[in-house]
Structure formats: structure tokens, C-alpha cells
Length: 76
Image: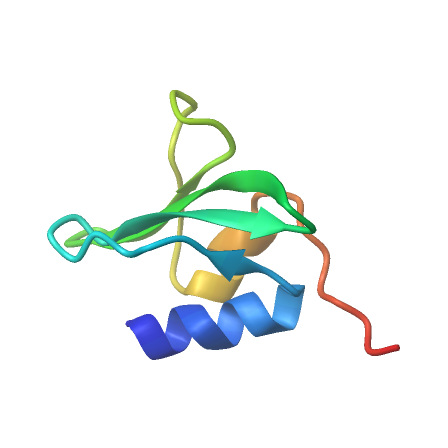
């Protein structure tokens, strides 16, 4: 799962904080700004735009990151 998260973050030009492997959740950042929270559990990948927002669920890390409204990074 961490490999999938790394690949998805690369697509969007994001980096993440330390992963809590018990709940597999982390914060995503872009250009030093918090984008949202992402995680994976027995139900699949989920994301929240804010700490107390509603979960958005998707089949992959890339899909759930896109659900936060982040666009894929464009190569310079």
C-alpha cells in the first residue's frame, strides 16, 4: 500500500507525513500547504479534505487523492 501511495503522490506532486501503520493514515501536503488526510482500512482507500470532514472512498490512492480536488502535477 505504501508503494501505491508513493506513486499516487508523485502523479499529483504531493508528499506526505509519517504514516501511522495501525490505521494507515497520513496528511498530504502540496507546496507546504495541507491538502487533506488520506488513509486505507479494511473498506479501502479514503480521504478527508479536513480533519473532521466526511470520508470520500475510492478504489485506489490516485482516485481518492483526485477526490480531494488535486490535479495531476505537470512536468516543467
